[in-house]
Length: 398
Image: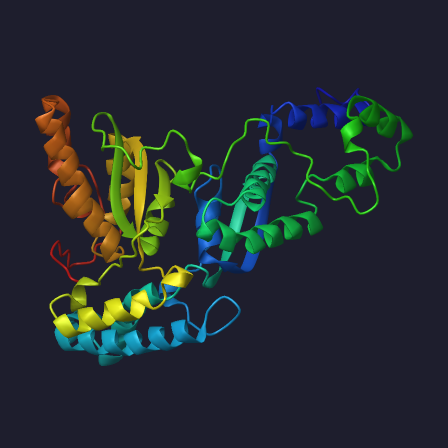
């Protein structure tokens, strides 16, 4: 209503003004929802690390692994090998546990298979395809495409080089869907209005269109990079000492699969770095079997060129103690959560925060953290679980 007395030329030019001047809040009210089929897991991780968005993503834990352009024959063979091993080990060690809670043999077999899949998928590379529904402010997806273009123009490591064709495909798909702001899309909106065309070209001659030119219009004036890769952040704390206080900067080593769980909590900021030396996560359910551990490490090392999901990467997360405890831990410090991320928070991160606050004589803050130490979320102060499992296990191996 405020703008109803203004003509199309004025409105369209003002819209471009907000884009070119990075005053993009007005363009955040319009959202784009994409259903992306066959998207590599690592590309989901790139998108899921940016603010703002919401996404529903098919879990790779329960997705059938089949050979395709993204997954090699060797990955499939090793996945199936370990799926059977885990199924047998879990049934042998915990079959009675699952039969007790599932009530039937069929229910127990199904539960055991899911846990076997969750562990076996560590063998599959991070380029494994999945499906996601991704909703994001319209201007934000244009910003993300400009960040991707920076990687395309100047990759900093081998993982970024492997991502280039997927970034190009993503930009190309968004262009075809008219999600990307391009010179071509601007012209198509102006074709039937000579006054608007003249006004836009006078103010922004750089958007003049040449046949076949569908180049992105949004300029990354602030020189922002994709937030997932620590190598692109000159201010990263990933190679610094941990910091403890009301705000936390915390480093550890965890798998790609674990980071993917963690980064979805948009209240904290996550970054990753691939170490020079390849190391892998060993599922605790087999760690007491020397032969299986040796076999696991041999097999996963043979896949290091495809960045298996079980590869250990260095991760930095920054956030307030409140966000770490009340949002991330209250979701992941749970018997039903992925085991690895539960252990990161229950056995590692929260106890370390508490101990270091005490060492730094931040007594008042340490006392507020103490009730969360070495506990699952069902024992957190004030937490009421909407779906009690009946078997919280702080020492679980699966």
